[in-house]
Image (tube, rainbow, N blue to C red; front, top):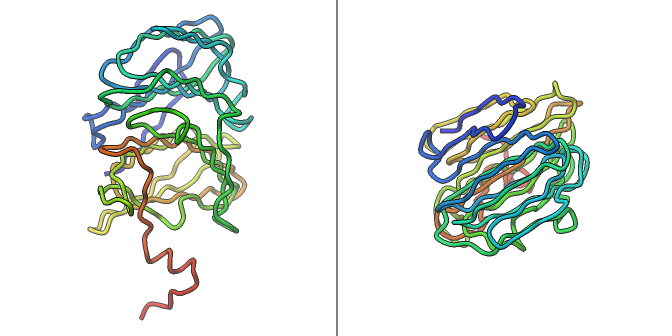
Length: 269
């Protein structure tokens, strides 16, 4: 089932979700807080990893790679993201050039492409939806990176609007209609005391609604899901997905709400 975790800012790397400790089988997710000059020294094993910057800048080096000046925005509402993809069996050292907040997430991978630094100019921005379910999506790690399991990006939801509507799911391997993926969402709000509502449900009767606030994290191992921002509150989510088989983002919408949006659904009797 879906779970929610309330997180707080802290120093160093703090793992928030570890796979197989709950319903997630693939994803590990941690938060990173660093002061200028701090160093994070680690390495990947049988996992590929992503260092995704919320705000601040850093340099990174390791096995046969060196990246300088990664990260340009002050916070998640201040522009496009920067990130570093790290394949399996790769040592790395990350040095904060300024105060820095980031996420580190991992998933098992038998192999991986080369280390890839993703800059703001590499991020694809698209507007999706309309009216009360319009939102802005930043595709950070969908294309242009040779990951084997991980996909990720950011969504910015205007006050009072919905995201992920109609609700969709991706928990069955059934291409080209659906792929089996785990997902988690990490939220920020503007203002900091704003909130949203995250709904996750399944056809067999599971139905959960979470009140999500600034720095909350929700896991979505299965089920349809959608999100709404409270009036007066802009809502940000970092979405991270891991593929069980083929790395493709295929989601099946809930046909009831898809019909409603098309104007073809009638009143239930």
